[in-house]
Image 1 (cartoon, rainbow, N blue to C red):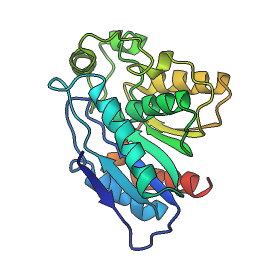
Image 2: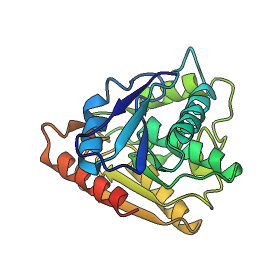
Image 3: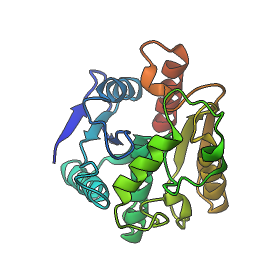
Image 4: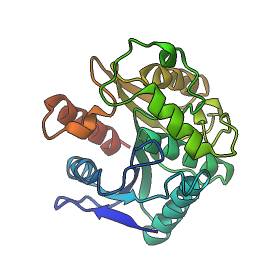
Length: 239
């Protein structure tokens, strides 16, 4: 399986971030997100392993999850003493959460989760999907519904590993969730935070007023995005 490593010059050994890119499970790659993973590596002083997991429609669920788990296993073999964090944006955030749920079954949990506007409900039934006047410059409800159908194929859309929002979230590692209020998934993310809190998970939610979907992606031209990545790095360094 193809992965890409981002290793900063100021590397502090002992922590590894495994990153899953966004793209609604049908698009994106380690290359499209290279500038983001490199920035996270630089700010956190951690090595970042970005995973090129298989994409739908050619490879529907559970291919992406299988790739995620294989990447985690490979990193554990290569870095047996490192603290491993799972991170991802949008669909990649949902995939990181799904992988953590699988690891819980194996009693083999990671150190923490960093979720940037995670897509965790592929039923696409939230109230925001019905708001014709909701304008997210990055996402559209129509695109998400189409992508969800391609990724799920024959899977149930409330399967815990497809839509982690419906899972038993107890026993998960500490999590940092960051999202903008102008994001189509913002209400979904707030609900996830509520459920994680109810499940007793150590959770930090960092909302950004007026920011669109995965605004961190635009750090080269958006100062708020750069500051947001610095906050992510501070959270990682405190774990």
